[in-house]
Length: 152
Image 1: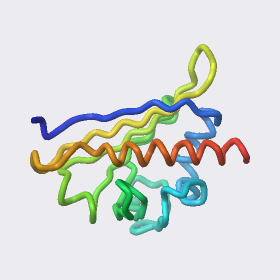
Image 2 (image 1 turned 180 degrees about the vertical axis):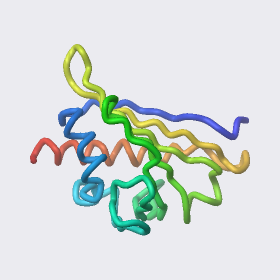
Image 3 (image 1 turned 90 degrees about the vertical axis):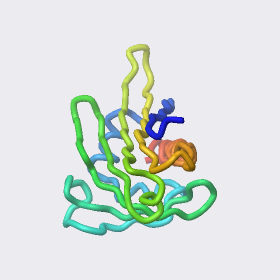
Image 4 (image 1 turned 120 degrees about the horizontal axis):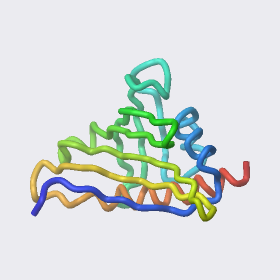
């Protein structure tokens, strides 16, 4: 059994690629107001939610329970509407050596918008399963956020 892997999901959304990217690149602190999947967020370290050196603390529902973790932005690519996050701390450190969450907003040539989430991970041992629960969390949260984005 491999200790490292990738999980991904593409979700058709109603909000524009620009709106999605803008939300996650410049208004990340509003996500907690757009989905019930996120219970609390706060700036843990740094002065700006969107600076690469800042660390945010999240409490979210994952696998049916409240889960705490930290997140920092590893990279942002405005041209490709892609953001890479590093997830760590508290409920993640005992299972994962590496946990990255990659977001991309894609405008399809045939029309419509898809957001893509990729989880790159490495577990600390074979006893830990791949993070399917986190993938479900981003799926459910994305659906709720999208419904709120189109209302705005």
